[in-house]
Image (cartoon, rainbow, N blue to C red; front, side, top):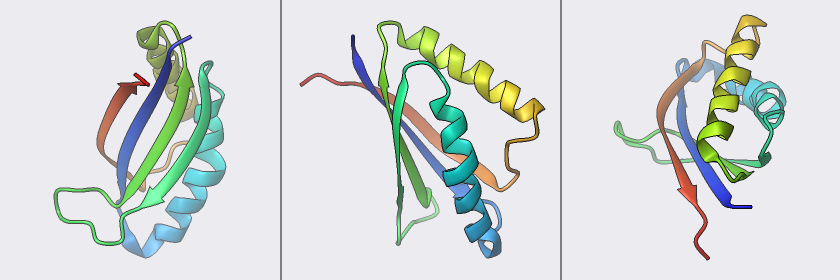
Length: 104
């Protein structure tokens, strides 16, 4: 089974509500993402000196999957369902995403 790292960089749209953003991300969003088959772990980081071009928050997700496209499609479907359930936050600004396959 191939191992992957999904990297997501975000910002909080309202810095005065950063505590609320982090609470939602840690206690609602990450558990929701980890419901997706193949997603095994999540870790978050904060950039204490972000520039305009970089996001303040980084989340990494460990994935094991033979077909990463199928796994990412399942994530998209899961997130659509969570959005319909009102579990997404308007405080999230997506800066960038990337998927890396482990090679060693």
